[in-house]
Length: 300
Image 1 (tube, rainbow, N blue to C red):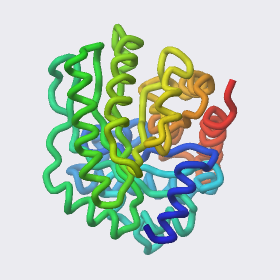
Image 2: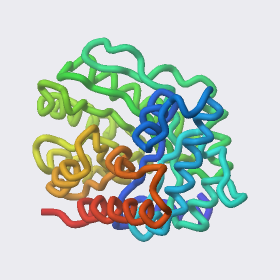
Image 3: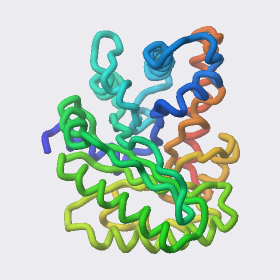
Image 4: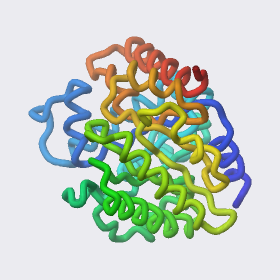
C-alpha cells in the first residue's frame, strides 16, 4: 500500500464524519433527476440522462460544504468515476482538491426476489473494472443486495454472496463495502437483523487475518444492535444507509447507534433542486451535511 492509500485508510477508519453516496445508477437515475427538478421529458436517451446526472454530481462535489472536513468518502457510480471535473478525473479531484476518499459502486443491480431476498446479479468484467478503478485512485467499492424478510436460507445466501465478491475485490487491494440492506418495510425487520448479524459475524470470523471490509447496513430497530460488528477486528467501519427514511428520521435513529456513521444518498440530496441559485444550492447542501455529520458524530 502506498502512502496515499495509508492516508486514505486512516481517514476511512478513524475520521469523524460520514460517507456521501452519489451512486444512483441506470435504474434509479430518472427518479433522482426528477426529484432534482428534471423530468424525463427534458432529455432523450441514456447519454443525455447521464450527462445531466454528471452535472448534478459535479455541482454537489464542487460545493463549498463538500470537503473532507465533514465528509470522509464518496461512493460513485462508474460513469462518474470515468468523468471529469475541472479537467481532472473525478476520483483525483475528490482526493486531491476535496480530501474526500473515492469509492465505486460495482454491482449491476438485483435479481428477482427469491427466498425473501434479492441477491445481486452476476458482475461480468469485475476484475477489469477493479483494475481500472485502482489505477484511478479508487480506494474501495460498494455492492448492494436486499433482504425483504427473516428468511434464514435467503439471508445466509446474501451474506455468502457479499463475502465472495468481497474476496475478489480485496485481491485488487481495494476495501469492499458489503451492503446487505434490510428493507425498512420488512414485516419482521428486527428478526431479519438478528439473522443477518449472526451470518455477518460468521463471515467476518472466517476472513484471513489482515483482511478489512466495511459494512453498510440499514439502521437497526434496536439501538446499538450492530455493536459487535462495529467492534469486530476485520471491520474498518460500519456505515448506515437512509433506506427511505426521511433525513430527520434517519438522523434521529442514527444518533442512537454508537460507532455507526451515515452513508446517505437520498437523505443527503433530497432538498437540492436544479432551479436553485448557487447560493441556495450551496446552503441547502451545507444544511444537509451539517445535520448528517451531527448524527454521525454526536450520539445519545
